[in-house]
Length: 397
Image 1: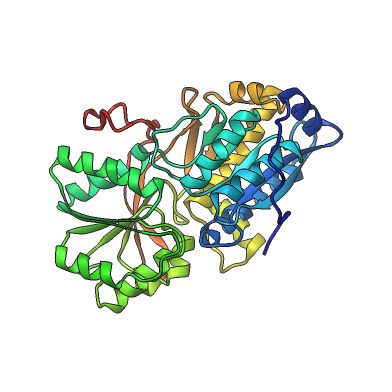
Image 2: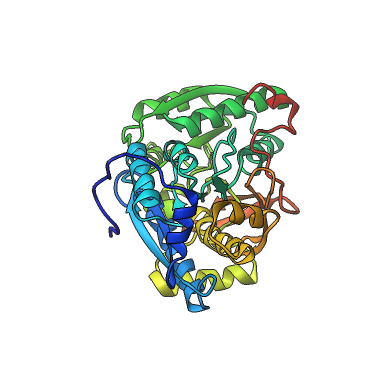
């Protein structure tokens, strides 16, 4: 299913924040951009995030909208290509004059959009965990920083006697930076790396790498593959007769939506690290899951980036209401310290870095494809995108 235009606009001059704010607030509507991969290797993950953002918009509109105005989404397809993401972001800000953009998944797409939102005084709400080492004044990060996913996952594995790590990732910025962090952490905390491999986005042949993993005999494979490469890897791992009991994996880009695409039989027993699961036990989540399935089908699942995309729309709407305006500077000021009772629990916007305080949860994939929480932090963790609170991380950024 595709929404929005197909062709990228010509790249050109920016628009002032005053004219942008005026146009987005004129009349009885406020336009917002929805920018995700609806085609290509990342569509397996991003289409559902788009759906959650649209659901949040529908819910807010049903309650009277924002500032008494209806939110109108303008959806575009980033097509799993960073350059296309940059072109579409520019189109949304300059031509459509949207008040904000909700979107991106890969760090490559986010980094392509970052200069566009900065140059055009736009605002991007980014809903996916990432490698950190970034803090843009024009981006709100509603997924996990590394100290809210990767670092605690490594700590948990080490405590559970998984000392020998094989690092497997897609060949782009998130996996390479994540693995740089993991290597520094393992060196400080008594683990070792017995192998490290990267494959291009969309890669489908993992036979050689599976043989390398077998030969290296790791205690765990730390997996930062992204998109539909995960389908190929886990099916081929399963076909090679390697189960979670033989060699566990811990993934940070596989959630319920991806498990569905990979097949629960190929993933049962494997571990993941996130801040939210469909099984997370809060009253808000019971309502969220019920409403999402009612809107999109009983067979659909919720997951962490889906929930973070949904939260982003609500956080933006609350900031706009508090600011009394869609003006970017006013929205940013109003957003500092803002709290929301999200499906994952209470989340808070950090005023210093525009990341979110979040609870960390390690989960295990069940036979039915659901994810059962096996460990969590006792309370939300303050975001530390540059890992300043870890002595071993000095020099990483």
